[in-house]
Length: 128
Image 1: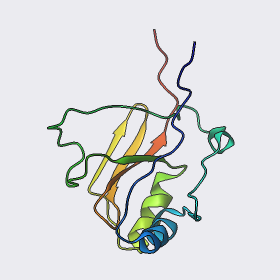
Image 2: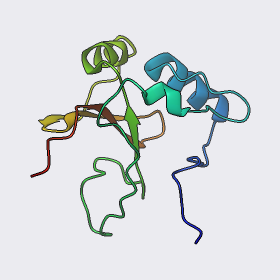
Image 3: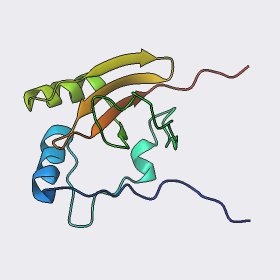
């Protein structure tokens, strides 16, 4: 039987692709080419607890705030403190941070007001 194996990409429109690609390169270190940026499975091989979450939210959620967009990105990072320092050097401050048993989170806004949830995963707690 056919089944979905994972997220194959995130595609979205932008007002200024060149400026947004530059912002993602400077602030988050994503060097986006003409076709995009390829996240490969080996990039997460040393990151226990990491994975892709596909999660619909209710239409009236405020979780994406202060963005008014209908979606947000969650990007896995290897070092939250270093990533937030990099963001700060570029004038980007988190709008929210929190620690959970499965990782550290920080929310930032991109150049066009999209919310990005940065996630430094921790190994998942043992299920009993």
